Length: 310
Length: 246
Image (cartoon, rainbow over the protein chains, first blue to last red):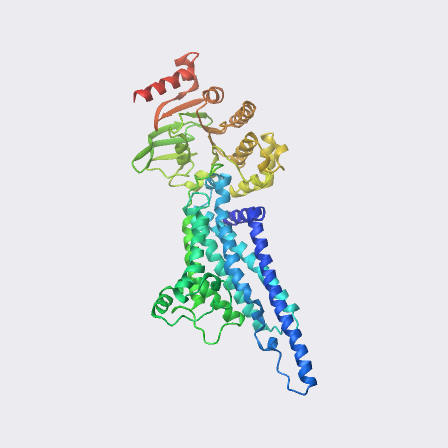
């Protein structure tokens, strides 16, 4: 077994035994479940109203329009999932990324690891591998719950291409949360003070989630966390068009929201993404850059730091 | 000659942080099979020296070899040949002693980690601790498991940084017994300490570091011959006086 794999397995085992991490993951799963229930409940309500209305219309000899559930994209019932991924999922990844470094620092095991016969880059690879696995597990949980919702809802016809789009949505969600996890991992490796990495990554996350949408689209924080209102067109003012062009590619929360709307089928007709760069490309570049930052920072991690007082 | 190559050898090894010199050029040889006590007050540069010799820090100048491997040219071979117990090791609280040791055995590339862990626990007489969570351990128990992680792979040279720091008298005694057992196996032990009683009981040779400079280096026998009964304490007091004068 390679040193990176050994380190990764140990880090993942440590995560599963840390109550604070488990609570956040459980919270994420609970919110995804609530999302699924909300989608299920809304759809079931529309179905019930439609059935009564259709029966009445048929009885009175009037034409019966199609069920609105069957004409809308079936994946649209999962529209809240994107919000929970960009809020709780991303913050969960930040906690995990920071924990992967901080756990060794607190245990005083960094010098013990550093005195073992393998290259420093293996430490970075091990930590990154653990993070990627943990965030993939989070998205797998979200995927299973989403799939269960889709398969149990009456009147929803889910096709093969729908499942493909769901998989792409989960992949985009994974890339989004992992980007923040990498940022936290790198920041924790760079900043030896306890929780400094957590705070630094959280500040970046807050800026991307709440500040940039204000600058590009005049979206207030409450609007930025609503899956529908966040998909607003750029206001017709020069300053917003300028900020959209400049900040659009780094406004990842908006990019992810646009991708979610596009993949789940609730994107308003003709709504263009912010800025000149397609959101999928911006997200991929952000993932790669944050990964490089994490790799560089974790490779240069100060292995002398830590101990009971750290 | 079986002991021709020193276990630890430094030539002009130094470390600076900016304008602050932490370790002045250090030239030192520790023969194989010795228990070398590295004495000095807090902040003298002992821990920095161990970190340089275990490749955890890069030297500013000079060279060093441990078990025949250069610290900068062959760090992986060097790390394969050493064991290291830092001061105040905690280990992973939520894992048992056995789980902690298995992790470090795998990282050391041990062929049969489970077997190595079992043998090490038995050798150090701590098998009873194996399946208890480290978070429930006293300082002394942690230190013994910490020593176990350092010798799992049967290293040629063992570095101990203040191994008895914070231990109660019984813990000190138990750890001393372990060090004696390891010495009996022919392992070279490089031990940082500022406890003269520990040096007197465990070490075969000593070096004294003051303000980053090596001010004394000789065998314990030579110390005994030169300083009569008061021995080490008189030697150390002399060094302290020299520091004040400097």
